[in-house]
Amino acid sequence: MVHIVSSLLLASLASTFAWADSIMCDANKKCPEKYPCCSQYGQCGTGAFCLGGCDPLQSYSLDSCVAEPVCQSKTYKWDNLDSAALNTKYLGNASASDWVYSGFPKIENGNLILTMPKNSVGTLFANNHYVWYGKITGKVKSSRGKGVVSAFILLSDVKDEIDFEFVGSDLANVQTNYYWQGVLNYNNGGKAPTGTSTFDDWHEYEIDWKPDVITWSVDGAVKRTLTRESTWNETGKRYQFPQTPSRMQLSLWPAGQASNPEGTIQWAGGEIDWNSQDIKEKGYYYAEFGEITVQCYDPPSNSGNGKKSYIFTKDDGLESSVKMTNNDTVLASLGATGLNPNLGASSPSSSSATGNNSVPENRGGSGNEPGASASNGTSGSGSGSGNGNGSSDSGFSQGNNDNGSSNRSNGASSPNEHVMRGSLFAVLVAIVVLVTL
Ligand SMILES: *[C@@H]1O[C@H](CO)[C@@H](O)[C@H](O)[C@H]1NC(C)=O
Ligand SMILES: *[C@@H]1O[C@H](CO)[C@@H](O)[C@H](O)[C@H]1NC(C)=O
Ligand SMILES: *[C@@H]1O[C@H](CO)[C@@H](O)[C@H](O)[C@H]1NC(C)=O
Ligand SMILES: *[C@@H]1O[C@H](CO)[C@@H](O)[C@H](O)[C@H]1NC(C)=O
Ligand SMILES: *[C@@H]1O[C@H](CO)[C@@H](O)[C@H](O)[C@H]1NC(C)=O
Ligand SMILES: *[C@@H]1O[C@H](CO)[C@@H](O)[C@H](O)[C@H]1NC(C)=O
Ligand SMILES: *[C@@H]1O[C@H](CO)[C@@H](O)[C@H](O)[C@H]1NC(C)=O
Ligand SMILES: *[C@@H]1O[C@H](CO)[C@@H](O)[C@H](O)[C@H]1NC(C)=O
Image (cartoon, rainbow, N blue to C red; front, side, top):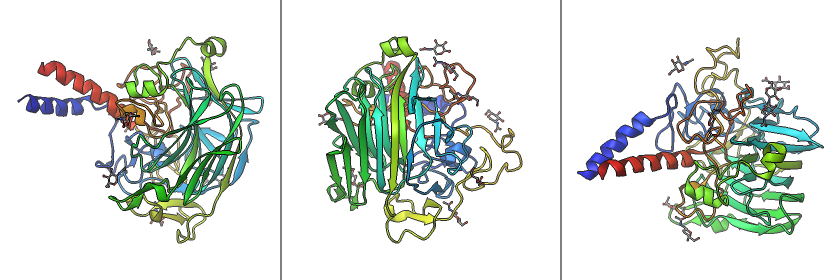
C-alpha cells in the first residue's frame, strides 16, 4: 500500500513538478520533433540546443543536432574577446567565433579571466572546434576557496570526457578524470601534485589524447597515463575509453553552492563562502588562463573524406559511428535545428524564429558530475547546479545567471542532468517520506 501510494505520488509529482516550459530528455526518452535537440542538461529545444553539447543519441534523430565543426590546430592568445560569442548570439559559425561563452569572462594583461560574481553560477567558455584526438596545452592559474572549482577539459556531445579540475580547497593538487558516455565510475578520478600552488603560480597543463592512450601532464612531466586497452569492458565487449569528437571547455563554477547535492559539496571541499577575500577585494572568484594551444591529430582511418564537420551515423556513440562530412554547421536562427537549418533565415532575430527553449541555461558546472549522485562524493568531476543565485531547482527560466545586468547569458553547453535529477529526487523522496509517515 505504502508502495502504491508512494509510486502514485512520485508519478504525479514528477509530472506536475515538471519545469514550466521544459521538456526533458535522456537515454530512454528522446526529444519530440518540435523541440528535437537534447542539450547536455537533458532538456529539449531548438537553436543553441542543437549546437555544442547537443546529444545526438538523446535527440529526436541523429541529424537533429547540427554537425560538429572539425578540429583546428591553433594557439590562442588573449588580447581581446573578439573571437568569443555570447551563447545567445552564436549560431554555429566557428570560423567567425572560435569560442562561445556564458557568464562573465574578461581580459586582463593578456590573460583570459573567468569570473564568478557573488551568487552567480560562474563562467563557461567553450571552444567551437571539436578535437578528434589531439593535444591541448594551457597555462592556468586556478581559482581558490572551498566550494569553488575551475576546469580545463575535453567533452564530447555523447559525454565522453577528459578532465583537469581544480578544487579550491586543495591548491597543491590538480584532479584528473575521464568518462565514457557519461557513465559514472568512481575509480576513474586521480590527483596529481603540482609542486607549487595551482592558484598563485602558472602551471602548464596538457592532455594528450591519442586513439590508444591518454596522458595528463603538468609542466612537461607526465602525471597519469590511461591506455585504451585498460578500459575494456568484457561484459559489454567494448572499450570504455573517450573516443568521440570533443570540445575544449574552460570553466569556473560554484560546486559548493548550498543548494547542491551533499556529495558535490563535499567533493568541492565544502560550502562556498560568498563573503571571501576574493569576493570582498575583487567582487568575484576567478580563474586565469594564459596561452592555449590545440594540436589536432589525424582522425581514425575509414572515417570518411569530408573536410568540414563530424556527424554520428549510428546510435551506439562509438568512434566507428563518427564520420567526417561536408555538412554545414551553421543555423539561420535560434528557432532552426539540424532538421531545418534554414528556418528564420530572412529574419534571424524575429521572435517567431526564436521560440521558447532556444538557448539552454548555464546552471554552472563542467561535464559529467559524479559527486552529484555519489553518496560519498569522494571523487569524480563534480559540478554545480543551481541557477543564478542558488535558488534551488525550480528555475528553468533562461538567462538567469547574469548578475543583475540586462545581459542574458545562458550556458551554451555544460551539464547538470545528474545534479537536477539528484536534487529533484531528494525533494520527492522527502515528500513521500513525510506523506507516508
Ligand atoms: C548531413 O548531410 C546529409 C546530406 O545533406 C544529410 O542527409 C544528413 O542528414 C546530414 N547529417 C547530419 C547529422 O547533419
Ligand atoms: C562564417 O563566418 C565567416 C567569417 O566571418 C564568413 O566569411 C562566412 O560567410 C560565415 N559563414 C556563414 C555560413 O555564415
Ligand atoms: C553584455 O552585453 C553587451 C552588449 O551586447 C556587451 O558589450 C557586454 O560585454 C556584455 N557583458 C557580459 C558580462 O557579457
Ligand atoms: C555585473 O555585470 C556588469 C555588466 O557586465 C558589470 O559592469 C558589473 O561589474 C558586474 N557586477 C559584478 C558584481 O561583477
Ligand atoms: C560493462 O558493461 C555492462 C553491459 O553493458 C554494464 O552493465 C556495466 O555497467 C559495464 N561496466 C562498467 C564498469 O561500466
Ligand atoms: C512559449 O511558451 C508559452 C507558454 O508555454 C506560450 O504561451 C508561447 O506561445 C510560447 N512561445 C513560442 C514562440 O513558442
Ligand atoms: C565511496 O567511497 C569508497 C572509498 O573511496 C568507494 O569504494 C565507494 O565505491 C564509494 N561509494 C560510492 C557510492 O561512491
Ligand atoms: C536571489 O536573487 C533574488 C533576486 O535577485 C533575491 O531576491 C534573493 O534573495 C537571492 N537569493 C539568494 C540566496 O541570494
